[in-house]
Image (cartoon, rainbow, N blue to C red):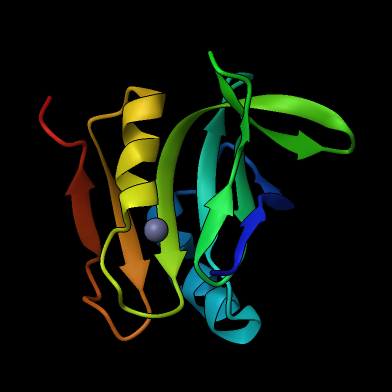
Length: 125
Ligand SMILES: [Zn+2]
C-alpha cells in the first residue's frame, strides 16, 4: 500500500469553487498516480494536498489531525473532496477519517468512476 503524508500542492483563494477544480484534480491524479484532496484547515484556508496511490495520511495528534506546511502543523477540520487514481470505492481509511473529523459525509472522485463523484458517509454507530 502506498499511503503518504499529505503534501501541500496549493492554497485555494476564497473565490475558488471546488466544483470548478475537480477536473484539474483528476488530471493531477492521473499524471502523478496519487490521491489528491481539498482540505479545510482550522484557520479557514482550503488547501490542495497530494498523498500516495492508496491514500493520504494526516498527522494524528489524538485530539486533532493535521498536515505539515513548511514545518508547521496545521489542523485539518474537513475533508472537502478527494480523488482516487483507481476506482476502488471509498476505503475503510476514508470512512474512519470522517469519524475522526466528526464529519457526516464527503465525496470521492475516481478516475474511470462516476463523473458526479461518489458520496460516502460515516458508519452508523
Ligand atoms: Zn479515499
